[in-house]
Length: 346
Length: 203
Image (cartoon, rainbow over the protein chains, first blue to last red):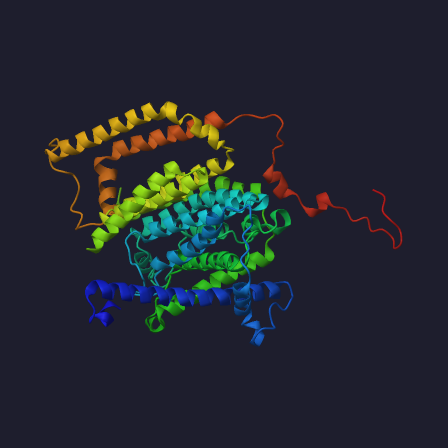
């Protein structure tokens, strides 16, 4: 990309190229979020034997854009008792963090914005910042239900980040690199030299399951959406928000869901590699494969949302601390032991 | 050029948010300024090429420690006037502490400028040749293995100590037996009385 702007001085060319790269990722992502909200509602409706959105545009395809326009034209209401500055910063943090994490996701052998050697750590760092959007909105609203929701969200995200950390460690142990593109390349022909996925490896499959469930908890999706449990705490931390500040939460949340789907695909199911290591499958560009995998995972997320009832809060904490944490810890031992025996020698 | 700009940007924000962290009236705002300071300190680490330390700084301090601070501060009911009333009383001690710290920093940097203490060859590998995650791993898990494990042991003891200190047995709590809950089937909890049409059920 930089070479296209070689008529400019290097620093300027780098800046221009990076800004264009960011837009090339962020704008389609926003479009994808709009369509994925529509898909979520359609899938959810189909599983409940309803029609779902079907009025705006053909098959209701333009529903999300109509909603976006409506929200954009609404008045932003700031409660008089709210802490004004933090109240407005909170949704911005959620939205920014959801976009920033996409910088290290590889869409192809060269198609990655920041191919840094601490890619996974960057993702952990960014996702650990996501909790501030929720905590701050809950506190700054100066209202009791948002505050409960903020406390729940903080405890939930911190708990599941521990299990996610161990899952990531086991993938990193197997790959020997924190760079996401190296992780994808290490999966090439991983099973019998033909299947491109860590997920079918019996030692890594349990980790893939733990990661899938933890990623639902980390993004506060059903069945772990205790932070916005409408039967107990209204809409949780979003209760006092309206218009664009509400929309930013919404976009950020679905952006995070897509990110988690992309991470599931990248870490365990081959990322942008085709499912089988056959030469003709590589004619299809990598972005198509990763997009297909993201959509499959998003379908699983919607499916779970439509069919599984919400957890109780103590069950959620128990699952995180008493089941996933010991399980993933034991699996890290197993995997490092196996690698020590087979790859590195005792 | 751009490095210098970035350095001054990060450094100025760190210093400013440090000052604002101390002077902010609202303790939650203080924590937010502290987080901003951590974040920009991570930026400074990136500038010197320590990307691993930078990411750890964000993950550990911004992601965990500051969340804990924020939690505590949000829960506390703090009386600001009372908090500020002792300012004059503590001022001399504060000034003395600052003087000692500043003296030590100046002393240490001038000693380092004079050449420091010769320790033989530095064990660090060439930072150009391998990324600093690998460099750190190679050193920590070989040369400094026992120190590293000792640090881990200290953390483990602290962890167990924290649990022991805060854990208390309370008699008045009803515990949930999750296994029992999971084993429960609909047949045990419900009964179909099959009442005839038009008649109620006596329980």
